[in-house]
Length: 312
Image (cartoon, rainbow, N blue to C red):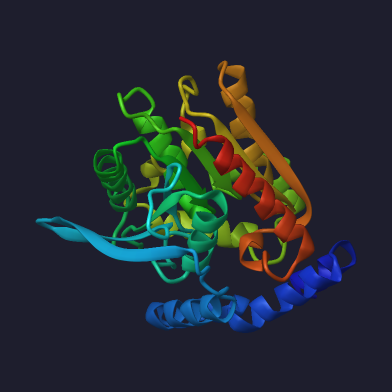
């Protein structure tokens, strides 16, 4: 029985149809193919769900040049003017997939609806580039954004990108240019099997517990890296001084409880954090926001959270 068949009775019809289309575009058995083929299919799937670009924004590509690498960036801004705030965006894809194109429509819509500048970061991917490559790129992009835009950015991370955003928030929380806010959408934060949702939804549609383990392992240079908070932010022991945090997690996701625990730890440390569990949704629901009523509502709440952080 497929994951969709196991969950179909719990899902709205529009979400079930989205999952079915998603799995046709990026089938679960694709991991047997060469990595370049996997990435090509992932890109094709993302293109199939790509929403039109809003007419009220402009897009600019640039790059940060270093002796050993270049970090590509794509900047989305309201047409002809500066946004109310700057959002530094880290895409999902298990640290193996994703680029400036794969999640570009979400960045464009966030720019338009929240009236913010959005900087999307094309950080290095595994297995070619192991930890700390992605984290180093994220930190470099943060420093550049704060310096170039003249304001501390709001960090935004989706799935694997949520891990990066949380790691950057922790690393920069006591800087003079600390982040204005932190928005995480179904983030992987690193305790996995220790929480109920990991077993309750181990075979959930669009992300399974086995896939989480695979994507975690492929990123590490050595097993001990898993204890590094820059890899798994829930391995940290200090949750003080973090920026205002909003976390959105779907009910049917192995990672659900990680987002909730992260907010609880911030609150226990005297911080400001909100976690919203979106009922009857699954991982990757942002890609379904134009097709699924519940996903659209969840995105509305995410946009509102970004707007609330814009007055830093």
